[in-house]
Amino acid sequence: METILTVDNISKSYGNKHVIKDISITLNRGELVSILGVSGVGKTTLFNVLSGLTEPDAGKVLLYPDKDDEDLPGEPQNNDAEIDITGKNGYLSYMLQKDLLLPHKTVIENAALPLLLEHVPKKKALEKAGKEFKHFGLDGTQKQYPAELSGGMRQRVALLRTYLCNKEVALLDEPFSALDTITRSSMQQWYLDMMKDIKLSTLFITHDMDEAILLSDRIYILKGKPATIAEEIVVDEEKPRTPDFALTEKFLSYKKRIRTLL
Amino acid sequence: MNKKSEKKNISKDNRNWKLSGVNIVPGVVIVLLLILWQATCTLEWVPGYMLPSPVMVVMAFVNDFSLLMAHARVTLLEAVLGLFCGVLLGFVCAVLMDAFPIVKKGLYPILVISQTIPPVAIAPLLILWFSYGIAPKVILVVLVSFFPMAVGLLDGLSSVDEDMIKLMHSMKATKWQIFKFVKFPAALPEFFSGVRIAVAYSVVGAVISEWLGGFSGLGVYMTRVKKSMAYDKMFAVIFFVSVISLLLMALVSVFQKKVMPWTRRS
Image (cartoon, rainbow over all chains, first blue to last red; front, side):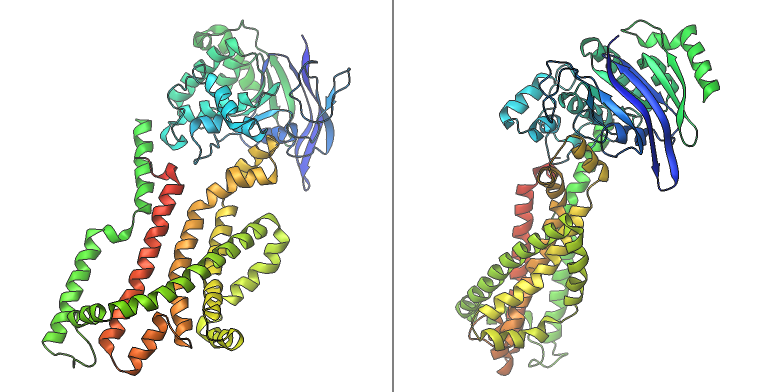
């Protein structure tokens, strides 16, 4: 399998508090990899480093982009096509825990935000965003304001916005954790369906074991103070998966294993 | 279910924007007070030369209508000119203070201290420096309307969710884009509250500076009727000034609804 992102021995501390230590992760093209850990373990710090919002104390983040991808910012790449993106933002799309929709923009304008920020003409940007509305189950909401949508719908808009950032790797920070249990499970199912068509390489933060097993190809367990990778688990189950997977023996055995690790 | 409750939230927000003037309860209270006032005068609980009755006040207003309008034109001109400059200056200051922490550190305390100086105290100085025309009045209005504007907008600009700024950075947004897409729209409610307060201050500021010297304006009219002991006219002009302020504030609210359509949906 072809690697798209390598996280190499990242450490980060604030003051004399070590938050994460020697974190190494690889992400392959088209994979969904979860980072599972209890709340406050340092998952978000890790993502802030990966997205380039904060500089790590040590370690590197390397991106191996598609050779004919023109959408990458910065200087033209050389042919070995390995970019050191440590501490640089704009290379990965990042979806934070909250939906963070702009209340004064309509739903479609919110979704098109990354395009508008890249100075795509407004008409073209809205057109491009509009094409995806059906696919994301948002048809009919284009002209509404975010306050008129339910939590699940708002999260879909945020996901669509992340998708329209058009980066090769998406970082999703607990995208479904703010939703109620019923909405969450329907969103997970929707997400599984979505992923049949979209082969987005995704790093996914969660503190929910079921969610991690259901959605991921691999799971990294983050644990301790400072947090380190305690274990890597491969979820060996064909994709596309159905929610029924969560009812199988196999699923439970994964869950047992993770529970003992956490 | 979820959608329903969200809709309720919106209408709740909407209620905040509504003018309190249209409410029925304060209307009833005002009418009762007017009746009580009229009764006090008609039954001569208080001598007529000390407290004119509401009917007398209305008569005074009608009789002096054209004169009042001529004076009001001057006062309004001063207030609007000063308000415009004050709002603009306050806007620029707030944006600079928000963008550059060093500016905020240097400027903010001075702004607060400046507000402890009563406008009445500087008005004579302004007249000394800029003579009796409209210039000193406009400057005083700028001084009083600038502060609520600057502070209100600054609060609004810094109230933005840190995570939203983080998201914008992750999308490589420039400082200007963050201002345009996130900060300014988020600060609009505070911006308009600031303008509303500045409007009220500006009319009062113009009147006060006219008291202390000038040739025309509602403040000048006030000092003249006071000297001739015409208290009915005094009351008439006082009410007239507050009606002008209220109308201007209502105008700001109407404009706000136009500019912020997302708070309007029900």
